[in-house]
Image (cartoon, rainbow, N blue to C red; front, side, top):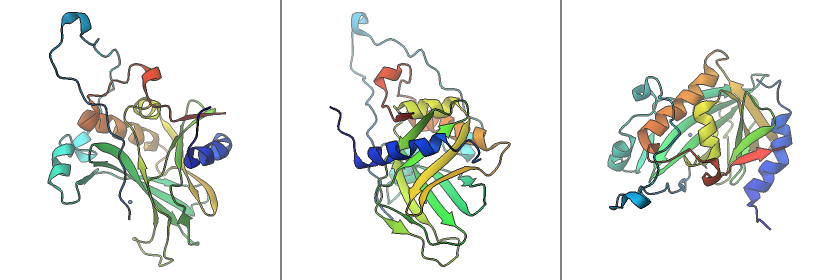
Length: 241
């Protein structure tokens, strides 16, 4: 029998809420998921790997989103960290809950920093609380990322730096990442002490594309050695109804 992590159990518990949200339109060190190493040793034609049959679409204006030399920038940073050039913003229908999503690259792993803001309450993100998202063309499937953070809360100071933060590894060699470079994002969600909090892109016209374009830029910068052709060989971070 497959053993599930606590975060996976929580995610399964609230995936029904993800599915029901059709109307709902950056601390600690992340632990990166190692990417598969590219095999560069000599080989004969008989055992040569087949070329990838899947091509990730090219991103637009990537130098202003996630730089091609992200690995070089990371290696020169004292914290061994590169944070993307662009943040994505999300808000719930009532305009009281906001999220800022920033992509990062650290020690060979890609992930998200998610800043959670509430305009009238002090909100906490529990230890390893998960982060989920769903794409617009399929309301029966959600995707989830396990948290890599400790419990933390807003301070109640109502300042730009008053937020709770979640940290999430996002494996490039995963089904969710493959979907992210293909599909328009419908909404994101995070589990907090006040419940399950979904939020949609603040820009209804371009928000869905911005997430997709960011993921394409990420792949171009740090993921081009990852073959996304075969779903059966990818990490399954998909949650079904």
